[in-house]
Image (cartoon, rainbow, N blue to C red; front, side, top):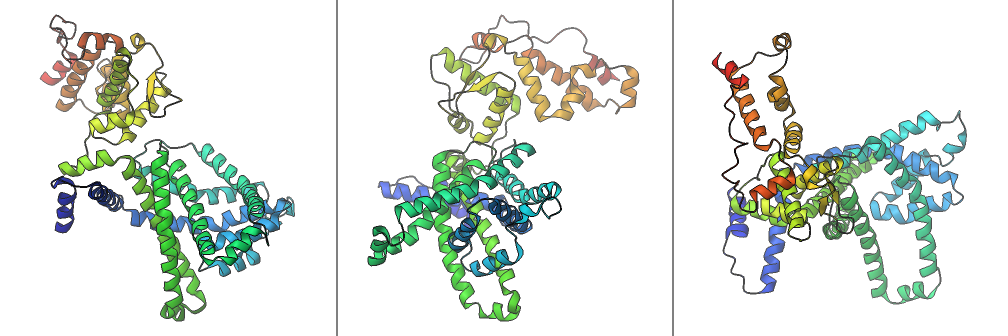
Length: 485
C-alpha cells in the first residue's frame, strides 16, 4: 500500500537531522515498531496464532490430566490445586476462572495415578497423554523457529525430556512460591496490614506483581523456545512489552465480555466457549508479537539497512559465508585480536545472525570451531589451520545447500560406469556445463588449507601472480566430450 511505503521512506530513508536525544529515541522506537509489525505481517502471524490456539485447545485436556494427576501424588496436592485456582486462573483467564475451576473439579481426577494398572493412567495412557500435551510445545517451537529463521531444531527426545522436567518441577516451584509468599507476607502480618491500610500500595502490588510474573514467563519463552541463541536483553525487553500489552488486553477483553450482551444472549450457555477461543487467539497474537519484537531488537541494524535500501534481504551461498566466517576468525587470531562476534559479522554482511549461527554450529559438529564459553557468540578454531582443508569445507557446504546438484555435478559423477549412467537421467547440455563449472570451482580450492590460503592471499585478497597450480588444466575435460556430443 502507498501509505506503508511512504511510512517506510519517512522512517528509514528520510533526513537524519535529529536535534535532540529524545527525538532520536522516538525515531528508534518508531523504526522498531515498524520492523516488528512489518515482520509480523510478513510471517503470517495471524494465521499462525490461529493454529497455535487450536493446538492449545487440543493439548489442554491432556495437559490438565497430567498436571493434576501428578500433583495428586504429592502430599500438598490439594494446596497446589487451590493455589492454581486462586492465583493462576485469575491471571491467565480472569473472565473464565469460575468455568475453569468448575471444569477442573468436575472432570479431572487428582487420584488418577493412584488407580493402579487397571485405571485410566497406565503406561500406554501416560505416553499418549504426554504426546498429546507435547503437541503445543512442538507447534510453538516450529513457529518461533520460523520467526527466528532457525534452521536447527531439537530432537524429539529432547522435547519430551524438557516437557517432562517442566511438568514435574512446576508443582515444586508452586510450593516454593507459596512458602516464599507466606514468609514475606503472612496472613495478618505487617505487610498485609500495610497493603490494606494504604490503598496506593495495595493497588501497586496488585498491578505490579502479576505484571512481573507475566514478564518473567514471557521472557523465558522468548529466551529458550527458539532453537537459536536469543540475547537476554532482547528477550527481557520483549517479555516486558508483551506482559504490558497482555495486561491491557485482559482488561479490555474483560470489559468486552461484561458488555457483550448480544453474544451471551445468542449463545446462551455456550457463550463461554467461543469467548475462550477468542481469548486464546488474542493471547497467541501477543506472544508472537513479542517474539517478533525480540527478533527486531536483536537484528535491528540488519533489518534497518534492508529497509533503507528497499531490499528483502541479501542472499549468499553457504560456501562463501562459511569461508568468510573461518577466515575472519583465523585472521583475527593471527593479528592477536579477539574473535569476531557473529553479530558484528552479520551486520557487516547485512544478513540475519541466525545464518552464521547455523554455520558455526555445523563447524562445531565437524570439529573445526569451538565456542568461547565465557563469551557466547564468539568462536575460535578447534583444529590447527594447517589441517583445515578449504576444498573439503566448500564441498560439504555445497552439498548441504544444494544436495541434488552436488550429487549430479560432483567429480565422481564423471567416472560412474556407463550402465549406471544409462539407468539414470540422460546427460544434458546443462549437466555438462555445470559439471565443468563445478570442477573448475573445486580446482581453485584444491590442496589449500586455511593457513596456506590466508598466507598466500594476505589481506589484499589477490593471489600472487606466480601461482600456477590454479590455472585451468590443459588436459581434456570429460565434460567437454559430453558437451560436444
